[in-house]
Image 1 (cartoon, rainbow, N blue to C red):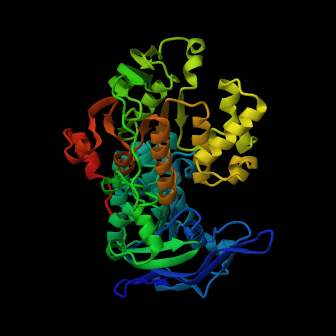
Image 2: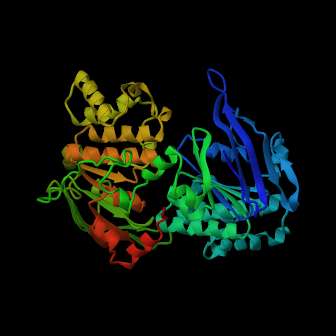
Image 3: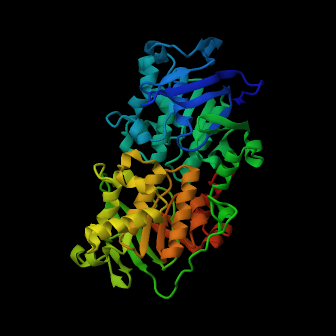
Length: 549
């Protein structure tokens, strides 16, 4: 199946019959199987699919970075350079590739904090490609850097150029990375999941930047698992599954009338207004939803205030007069931009951060002020599920030992009883028994998240604090994890405090919603009321920024 560029657009890159394989124990394993596509000038082609579908390795192959041992072949892998000269990319030496990367093809990665050099200022990072390719005199590099930063929407570019990556917000770091990719004036820009970790308003700003670049004549290859992002930005969409393109076409046509079963499944798994009250992973079925017990809150916060000292000797108010309640069997969703105070509230709920003012009650008992020694007997009843459980797991431990840890800490069960309980938990989160002997690094993202849920449930908690628990997962894996949480809530009567920047996920999961801005809850109410008739201007701005299918 070919995703050809429209005839009206000059083709920048043409890929025919691309195949990529890696060495394996039993011979080469093919991860990309004969795909063909093209990207034209001023066009955005989105390649969408799940993790492991071959999207990212395809993108990396276009800049000669497919990976150690990669076997790359194609009928054609042709790039139109500046000036119209055509070059075949297969077989280039590393020296020849250095003239292609940056100058002809820019590459924007997902995690700007990892991609940007922490020891260099933003100005030096963005200026390096300009110096490498001698595009302007050395004396004019600083001015060119400021122009590039302004072009991608960085405010006060002269000041930001002098800062280091850790001094910038996530959105500004991502814009700096885009500016660096544009510095050598490439015709083609490849963006691999450039908005996955960003909140909805920053994501919208980055998408606007890409839209402007396309209008200026850049070709853009967007790699994403977010169909809503592809819907908003792309001219054409190519759907990838198991190393093959299963469906391609104009974005509107693919999204409105998907022909392939896999595309239909991807679309049905996207959470939002239409998915409330039904399974995401089985759209024809409706789950039995837990009924909240409104008699007494399991968690109550009263006038919580938390502040942090800044390096410039100022103060950041991460929470200011926050009051909320969570009841048994209920999900309270907390939404807001990065820096709004969501995660701080989660830490206060877990008693990992003592508030400067206010009081927290858990199960009707004082929770925030007592010593940890007095809190310890209640610890088992409040657990957390985080965004990236891999960082919280000991890589030396097997899955068996990871899930067993809370049982060792919080119960008096013997070895045989603990082993039996671990088996029950593994079945509860729909994992195969043979996974118990494996280590976390050998698991997929969805499997690791299920192990994290099993570990959290081991001590039979009353409340789960879910802090961005699915933001790193592709859409179908996300659907399975969200369905699992809803099912467990009904079966076990769990209360959940669900923190996320993804408004579609929040709308699908929550009974009530609290919207946070600058440490303050600006609006709260039943989920559908907040989404259908938002009262606060900030809530309306958040909802307007959500990409829509």
